[in-house]
Image (cartoon, rainbow over all chains, first blue to last red):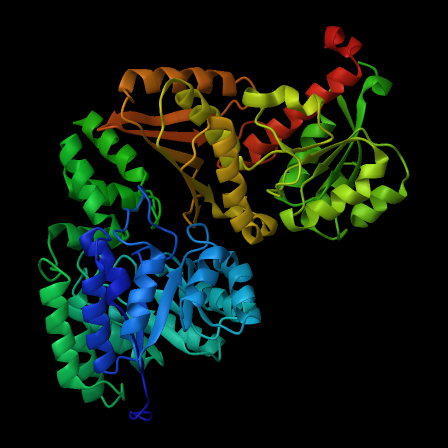
Length: 337
Length: 296
């Protein structure tokens, strides 16, 4: 590999994406314990918040135990080395939420939009740039768009002020070649760092992250024990040594990282994420893994097979945020039976 | 119907909302479209309207002011960030201003809730497409129940949302929340917006979740059905896609399909706010020319 010693920035959204796995119920001590452990391992970026980002606590996607302000102040205090990142989806959070997060000491802000909707981030990225805040633009549900389209959207994000761009495999749908094509197209189109965020529905998260790095990605997202929606995310303490073995430099202390992951398993989750039947179906159908808890609840109530609900949601191209469709789909399936 | 009995009208902005509004005004028996003012003659909206023979200019609000003509009703379909300046420029012309941006400048109007307010205010605001769909239902349910919390999630198809709305998302949310508080009397409110990239595009949808200890299936269903029937008198594609109550939590899904006109069926968000704007403007026009009420 020509750039074998290339540095990779590992971005850790355990305390944000992991929230999906516990209905957004992490408490202060849990946040503090994991943030301190990740910081000790020199994980470069620790992201925190409600699973759907700033301002998203709601009946639609789940109410968080702690307010955004509280989460940010606890994690800020626990970080001495790592940057603190926040995530915000326009339409769910607002500029007010961003200003408060920056006030709490957020070092890095990610603005997310669905894969073809980069221009929803124009105003917020512009305001962050004007305020001198490091802001990245990221595309959710990215399997729904072709590589060239994703590259075009990333060019727009850079134009609005993003100093980093990337794609999320929100449904855990990609195979490595899909990732290679997309990261390569984006790399060819922009000069800023490129990020990949994997989910493990089809057991591909680490392989997909390696494919992203090999295609030129600079930032890899990963969570301790894969703590995240559904089947979970790319497993942090696995992907880091894998990248190191391949010759990439992450700057992370392996033993302390393994300690942090052990703390995560002990303190944050009832059990590590697993690729159960529903997770496989959600990955195959291209539906956001974060739908899992509600799909299971509502399927039980309506007496329908949650796998059928996921496939029907996939047919309707439901995107993250459209959890209200679960009720309609389950009721329609119940009426058919 | 005689031409000179109609009220004169102009539209500022020729994006998705402005261009459709111009079409509707040109078909109105009560309004006479005098000018559509965009900022660039080469935008698709203005070019199409010009080809249809409608009066257009690329000179923006300045061109409208410069005509010196008294226009009875001016619709502002630009951006929330521009509306206050437009209102100031147009104030001396003395007509009614119908604002389709979420600017929070004028008196908010939801036709089935406070329609007659248009007769007492010179600047009325149409809140938002989500507000126009949700608030009649929320107000009807809140009339009979104590609602502790209401949540409104709107999902619109990507091609139905133009650039100004995308830039104004924060204002859209704030304005819609304020309008729910005011018209439904529900203090704790959260509004969220999704844009769907799905192909073919999805129909405009508004999902409501309400918390209230005394909510029942029957009472919510009765209120929702009555509102839907009233809404369909001027928004034909207004439909109830779901309505249920479980454990003190009501869920109501509304879908609005556009009907008639040039806009595609999925773009019910454009249909509902433009139908509402046209309705209040026509109400105003009728009050200006009461004789037309018998003629029409």
